[in-house]
Image (cartoon, rainbow, N blue to C red; front, side):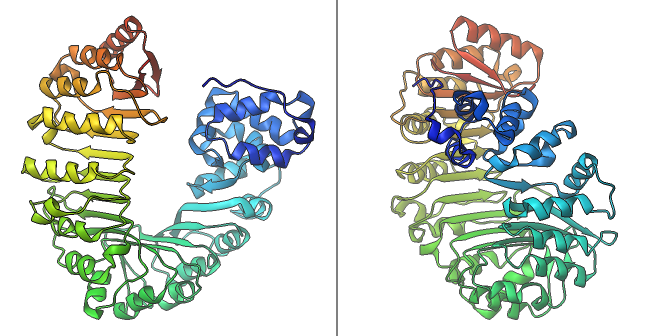
Length: 508
């Protein structure tokens, strides 16, 4: 349905807050711009006018569109900082993804002389801290001003999550940061060094926060501590903590297994284990309430490719009755009978299988059969899935089912697409019509010089018979771009260049 600007009632246009609330409900920045253009020019106060400037300038529009309705100030060019700051009242929240860069941007934009290293950031936090929802990449170094950082965090009263990377052995500095962020719900703490970080006594860092009643997510990456059993018992006792990520934290997992402490409240679990791990299976199988898990992500750390056998996750499928996301990466998966008898998932939305060694095509088919039974399925990501080239016709059958159903995105990366698999994918596309109102996105990663440039023609001719489908491809050669442009023009298909290497082609 086409959208066009319409004149808004006067009762609305004189209340910027009302306009901002309406804008927050609009997912597309194009719709936000239409809303602003529908307002009488005199009704645009300074924040609304600043936002309109950002939305009508191509360079700033790309940044706004990426984060809307959040604002990420440091991602804009320095020359646009003043305009972004003027528009902040209209944004729902502020995300800080690179704190050090934000320091630099705010310092350069400030007209006041800097009295301390973080003076501009502290001034910003005192004015806008209630809107700052997340701060990532807080890198603690010995040279940092350890008084300014905690002060900044305390001023961010709306802060929901922090991500801290430790590059210092000063436990007091780490504790001061976490004490200043006791009001957040989500904490990520990672060691900057590959050797990890031993925090010693964990209590000054986490005891009060875990017992606060508002801690919901904890991610620990390469973190070690004294009294591991005491720490994991505190984690288990935090009934508000529903999300736990342990990356390369074998000692903590061993502590959980040794203490035999069940994590009854956890509904989202991510583990990234080393190549010699022996604790993931007993931990997940025995100490986590499988029937309550909504997200399960398993990954391994290995310099030599997939080595760790995580097939046990397939034996859990019959118990994962409310699972919404299953992600398995960089591991070995063997056929398990439980996969064949697992009941249909009723809530599964996302399947992500990447860099896994799965030699049995029947296991791939079993996994796709189980996944496809979910009425909620929206996203499938496959990386190094050899079934696509080994049995293209069978895979195409599932692809067609996903296209015509409610799935919105399928990514095929490093799947060794050959001529037969491209033809099978095109066959799956032919004359498909979406039952869902959302557009289906198919991301294909293949080398047309190996498969042949005619592969584009086969795919786009099939796309021309579809409705509600778009194909995204990666191309970095001028010859490919010329060929794609010629084909889409001849077939009357709309082409959109995302950047210099990615394009999207839309069905009619």
